[in-house]
View: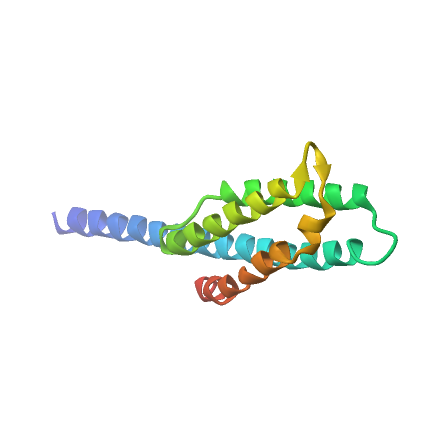
Length: 141
């Protein structure tokens, strides 16, 4: 009887450890995905700022970059989120919604309104995402 109880205890302990390991791996995966996403936002801001300044502004490239960003936002919004990161993810989702609104407002009748890109709201919103980087890094510990 003791062997059976010890065996059951060992199996239960092993299974609970697997759940903890899985949650830890999910958290690390989320932290990696979120970090990549935030880095992508920073790169996007730099590229768009370079494309929208000067005399030779390439509207087609800007539109393409905005479309790519929109896809990245929507993809990030569908990530599986570990319990420990739900609060951070909700905050990022709110900022993503704000960013999507800015992108949609920058397009009028299917055309890009350059003034909306150059007014700085897009860059300020993306810059505000950097506040999440420290929180995400703590998840990865």
